[in-house]
Length: 244
Image 1 (cartoon, rainbow, N blue to C red):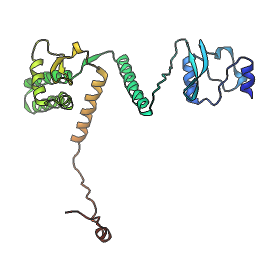
Image 2 (image 1 turned 90 degrees about the horizontal axis):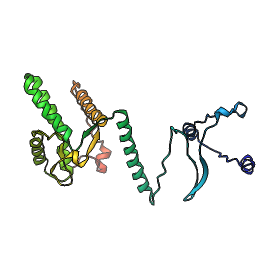
Image 3 (image 1 turned 45 degrees about the horizontal axis):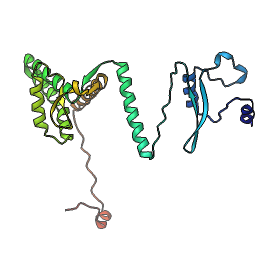
Image 4 (image 1 turned 180 degrees about the vertical axis):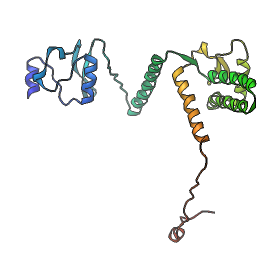
């Protein structure tokens, strides 16, 4: 075959490569995808320090390493069980998404519900200056934000009311802006010292999505309730009717 003769000439050839993989190789090596050998030029070549075939378990894979300024890379994840690999892949994907968000918007906020408590505190202060019905809406928004630290405390097996009271008291102090709930101990700790942080972009999107969902619900003028049709005689005979 052609692959055999290329190997005898010292040329590594790979067949049955998916289009998506070819595009990734092009971004990694800087090479151009050429569909016709007659149109091939030296400028179409890419660069890689090492290209070799390795056997990983029962599969054979081609590794392309040492590319100059690669715009596409691959991460090999291995594990004893498929579930372990799937969980590692999800964790790695989440970590990469966090890095991508930080690159897009290089800002962070404190986790553990510290951000929500501080925003709710400032909203209540602002609401007292507004007055009227707007004040009630602002206070309701602040109360909704406090659901986040309460949920964190409840998921950690702690009393959400006690944690919320402690958080409010901590944020009234001069340097209490970074205090949040420690889900392991149930205590209010300094998230800055514990290095519990979140990307600003993620927090912004979460609050924006929640607000948009609430606005959509408030815009509903009427609701049509669809009831289930009554069971037929055959269904009643078979026992598919209502149970009392």
